[in-house]
Length: 279
Image 1 (cartoon, rainbow, N blue to C red):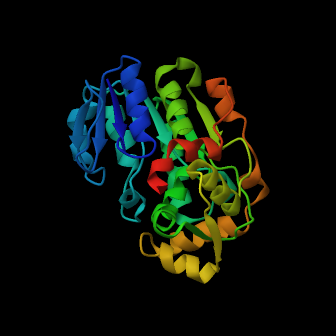
Image 2 (cartoon, one colour):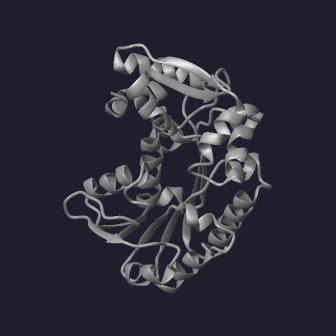
Image 3 (cartoon, rainbow, N blue to C red):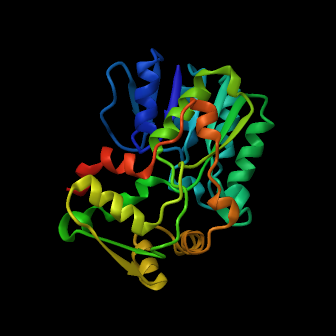
């Protein structure tokens, strides 16, 4: 049996479906009730209370570990989950980390994630680590403004980075959970091309078949909107990356193709599949 945490999100939902379609027994864990594929057990649980995982891990062969936002808080102890996996006889853990542990290693959340990676490496478990860059699905922040005003509003309109489709992350995660050849693998996951916010607006225009205007925000305007849903420190951190990506953050990684045998999906592919969110 495979336990998938964050099972109803942009990565966990397609991962759960892929594992179920592969004939695996799956327990989908999320903080809120949700529909899951037939044959999948769903459990509502909060990883901030590690004891809730005990009965689930007792029957698990593998674990996909995706940390919710509160598990990045200073008082959180996500390394305890690795200890629980060891104690309960889990054989393999696939960890969703972040490209930032190598491109910007000194922020608090990335220091903690690197510690979690190190704990996993030293655990004696089989493991793989996934380090995605920016997500194509972050464009859903614009869904309401596109639906109501046909506007994408974002800062740094012409600065492009290689966004990764969460569906590709899910497929890579499934491969790492199911295939022994990925044991000890560390995969940097990006899309196949650089794309700017202005370019994303154009792709959404093409998917909708109707014009979407791009409006460039100042950094201050962007932060004011972001702090409604995230801590100011994280907003500043995100804006630093968006405004001045490093060479490592501009690099198109070959790792999706190495794992899946095909190129990663483009942002245009993502927009076409998710166009209903913008209608």
